[in-house]
Length: 133
Image: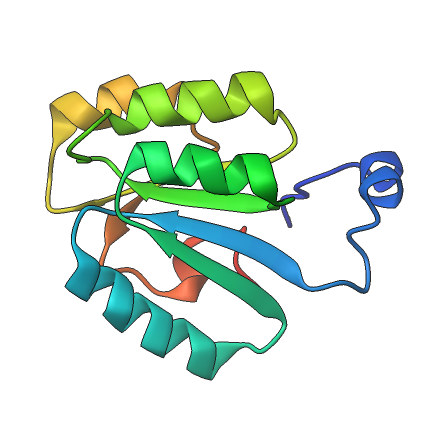
């Protein structure tokens, strides 16, 4: 059974069909973001990818652009992922919210699960997530 991100009415309202999907990645490790950028650009040209190293910069990016997805590492230097995703939920409720962790961090996972649509352990492949096609 396939999981839908939006109902057909929401998709039509946002005009997401036929346009480039916009994804914002947030992680405090620039080298991780660089490698993610390299890997994902090879996978799909149908995505517009943005990368930020702080929650504050991510929120500024969201203010200036219409994103479909935010994917954030659970450890950020200026704000916890749960706080960032809670703020994104409050301001932009239709944005899909994904948290990821490199390594087992149960205390952060528990705090982040509520505002996130999905929690991923890194590394993972596209088959691990119904959000990535």
